[in-house]
Length: 557
Ligand code: DON
Image 1 (tube, helix red, strand yellow):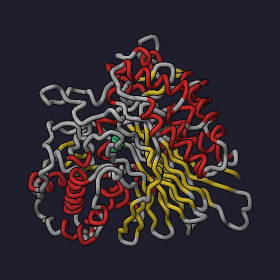
Image 2 (image 1 turned 180 degrees about the vertical axis):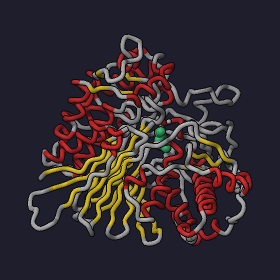
Image 3 (image 1 turned 60 degrees about the vertical axis):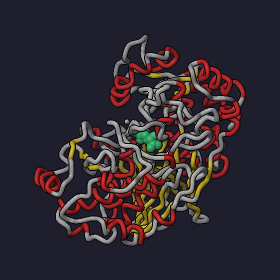
Image 4 (image 1 turned 90 degrees about the vertical axis):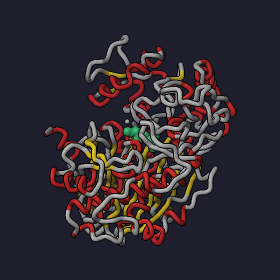
């Protein structure tokens, strides 16, 4: 416990006092100590925060294979101080060109269990390698080969697997063992590895090397591409070389909002994160939450979540394929309309919200890191292969574990792996990006600039919302990342809460207002946050105590 506190302790460092020419400090928080170290290493080699982001992303792909990787995708929200540029690199996976609406259904039109979650058909075309190349070439100072070096070293020399890895390996063991090439990497002679035994990934080191030497072509063309396409097709998948040739990242304008003078900058579609976050904050902006009693406060936050997630299900998908009423969803007047349907004494059941296009529901892994330097350059990145160990399918000879992000589309009448429902806005179309909940975010109130985000599937947005409200109270990164959490996502119509997140009196009060409540089976999220306070010239960072990450402040003295 003590060690955990030491790891997550906010580290403060004061600078700018007098002349500090030549010093360069950053705050980094990531889900794995070795990934945080990789970022610092690159800063000390003369890299900027964008080079560090490449290094951390690539390191996470090696040391946290449960959460993200070259076989997946993600979102990198960037701010460059020199020209005040805010941009979002959308490196989300895309549906293969042979994908179609019924690909996960049987002849009767019923969903084939787990087909969109396990194995080669569940995998969409990866975006992470293309995004790293772009991030390095357009925004970095160092060559890609330099920024990838720590990751290649970790893959070659190995790293000690921790408890989180072992827990998630057990969770996905049945699927991983179906694929000998996967089992060979993550198990020890077919057995669960011992805690802290060394995991080496020689093929992955080779693939990273190809990327380092040849850039984009090292992954999307040639030997690695052949292996990806061939093994996927042999296993019932539908990838082609054309899919790999066609994959492009997109730079998008982030969505922005304002909550009580705090500027929010967050992910635009293909992620729902920014819009849902800002819509919920807009709904809440007219309440005096600080002075409301705890039950009313949680009731109102839940009602805002319900309405914003409802709009997610109705309107959101890949904006390259559908028209999204972004202006309306982000407008304060629209939020006021939604607010007028909120009663303080009673919940509105989700079934009473409109939505003809929505099927009824039938019935966690990803990663985040945050970096900010002492002048305000920053990156918030949330990266994913979807479920723990993605689809469980490694493309033979590449070490690349493929995502199961196809499950984030609406492909059948039921809910997806996170209980989310949706309609045609998020239907499968060849080349389309599946709707995400990833919410890499900046918050600025003048003196304080925060960088934050978390994994957690559908709960990502509600976690960032609670953190933003805590930021608004003037609390620290350590506080935001460790907040007790509760969540409502419209459907299922349940207010879910972590153990001890609500007191008995709060629970009774919320039930009396009509909420159906349910304790979550486990604590969720792994929030990573960093902050620059321009008034006190202080950098700080914090890593969620639920995870095994590391937050540091360091750099060049
Ligand atoms: O993009 C999304 O919304 C999901 N694929 C994220 C999955 C996730 O966060 C899993 N983490 N526990």
